[in-house]
Image (cartoon, rainbow, N blue to C red):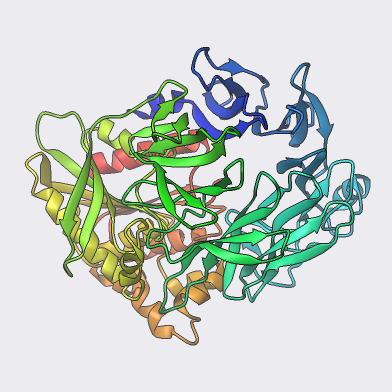
Length: 625
């Protein structure tokens, strides 16, 4: 699948189910050639597939994040008719859409419970309403931001001067002086509309530790549901009756212990809490919110499992686990009120996102829109140097002779090659004639806690051994040209490419995107400086860790040509790491190039940029392979 074909595919990114289960709406983005942008729209789907999908919204600016209210009205976000600022709109079951809430800082999210609509926005410090917020913004002449605590940035943006807020539409500000407490917050509203369950970040020396809080929507009174200095809470979900809340608990890493994820159940009636899913060898996915059954008897959630992300059901009373649906990766879980069906979005390495209907009695999965599947996908299995089984995916092109091999290395490192990728799709490379190996080395998710722990101390060295072992196995295949191989990685994968560069000359060329080059300088400049201190130790306490893990230590060994790519707005791995790598390679005479995207963050997302990114990588591969 070449890049142009990839860009024509619809991107299903959200799913909303009405309270009575009669309506299912998807947020779908499509590439617009004229504007060069992805433009979203809302489409109503027929769960029975008896009729075709019907487009509900249409504007140049686009729409997204659909949420049903209890009366059947559909809430969504759009910047149409609002000077480029995202506003909240309401589409009644019968009638035309109307704009119901605007804010000077835009509207970033919406959740609804009974008649209570809660939005997330941002306001300048000291602003008490939209009017004063607008005034403070207009009076601002300098771009300077005075920071009095760390972190100063997150992902691809600098924090401040405005602050995230939660507000009740036509009601009160639930956090009038939040500081950094609602940075990247996740929240839900109880069915009666009286309470917001939200994450609440507390600064712990450069690391925003997430509490779980309940906020009264009438008074703004806030009480803590969970506070653990050694863990943070994510993806709060409220049950259908409003009695329970479940949240993912992320136990923070330590230099000699990997993190872990569990699900904690909170009873809002009794105030008690207990682990619901704990000590599970295969981790729940913190990226996909769990969902309660309509009668609160069970919880549906997603786990990482050997290159897939299936749906599991846990009985709240007994703790019994049952696999509901497998064969891919599932997100956006939406249980039907009659208890027979679960709606979701399914995707996998070889198939993009598609809304599906899951029969809870049989596990049968039915796609609700035409499905695109790319061929040439094989499961690869071998054994690591220490005897541990290794797995991965091999994407094969349609060629007559042996194909050159591209080793791709995933980021994280707590991740897995299990999902469909848009920006740098591996299928673009198979279309150009390359076989692509997608391995899950040490620290990958879906293979048990021991598999994560075995890489935690050795870090790059252990991952390197695994990558070489699975590459060795694939290169023995008759359909692979072992004399023409390259390696490409992003984020932690980019760091591993940097490590590979100093440890072997087996690859003809390398591509490193947004990878750490020098751990010591990275720790003090990245957005999650406090997290990296927990993960590795501080540079003062564990200097040997920073020295031994830095790919830069092996600069003198590098002879392989390296293409370096980076986003200028990247705060996770600041662009200085890529520039430092490129300058070092140039200084010692290694053939290299640097592709910079000044307007991109940690990933490359804008269609024109992803087109150039893929083209440049293909040109680099063609030069050396």
